[in-house]
Image 1 (tube, helix red, strand yellow):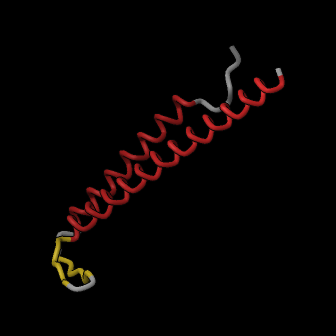
Image 2: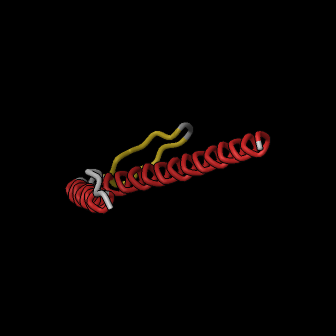
Length: 95
């Protein structure tokens, strides 16, 4: 078996290290910024601690990233299945 230069195990470990580093940075940033922050939302105002604001923003970004990935993978799988079905139909028609 030939080994490729693109090691998926190493890439997975690198992603985990990167996510843990990002989490540490967010925690330190949150702990250093406890002051309340006023937020203008279309018709209302809210006052949140900067820590809560940072964590909520990070959580929303993470959720949107996960949703985007799931939708992209679903679309990719759907296209691959349609392509395989078309190829199988073309092969059956020529036989």
